Length: 411
Image 1 (cartoon, rainbow, N blue to C red):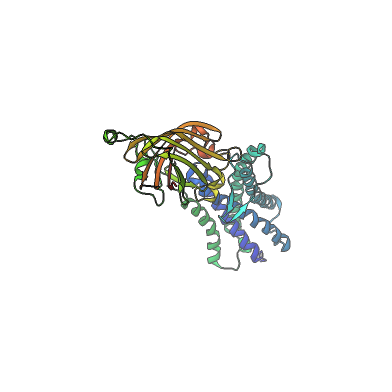
Image 2 (cartoon, rainbow, N blue to C red):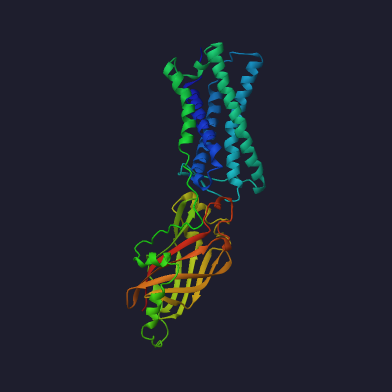
């Protein structure tokens, strides 16, 4: 019996296994929320792989035509219709998925298997609903066609016994007859196995894990985690000798290279941690007279990174930082107050995405003389600033922990 070419056989079983994987994963994606982010990226990569392999399969079909049909009548017409439908499914599912991603409100970048960037299709946002509904409908039609195809193959092999299935097996080997179809089951099982394990929901009072700034002294953690100043420490501080009046203007401090501003936010039981790569700070303050403080910090929001190319690509968008319209966030404060030995609190204003709200920070100073190490933090409510205002942010905690640490010098 004439067989398909070896290339066609390899493509047939590879695509079948990948389709089984996609079906297995696709069923679970919508219910995974934030835990499915990495799997969603893999789903896109496998989908584009299926699209490319299908195009190659179509080329091979015309280069090396398929063996002649063994059955006519309505059964043969049905088999041909299923084959045409499967090709439409293998092309349509990836294309509608690509269109869905390209027209989504949140532009999530796609790196195929984390390596090769996939550009978005130039489609209007108004087609998003059509792409989404089409992708779901094609998926269900594809499952039906997939099952019909398998049923037809079993009918020929077990009932008619015409040996049709051997046309898609490279050699009359029982091991291959069992092993190649088993790839389909393996693909389906693999899709289930890699699904993330659901995490227990956190209570509202659960703390947000905060990444400790690199190369910062231990007081930095205390500055972030403290909720109220120690009353005894304040009393002792107040009972100390009355501060002298400042002799001259407060010193200006220059931030030295190597500092860090980091952030962390809970995300469905996990913690996303990152930092801002570009920022400047203008600080005027006499540590003995904190009311003299004049602080201004400017952060380049486009420099935010969490160490993941997919998520980093989302941060500049309107759902998060809206960098195109609001490239900079600023914190300003006039005056500070002592909350303990070498510990301070400054009340000021924070501006993000054009929205200005009151904000306080806590910080500690270590060292003496003209060089001081500064470390501290703040807790920022993201909703008032419109940070994380879309569907992909539903699992984020309402508050973000900010930490900072740097060395400052005065002439």
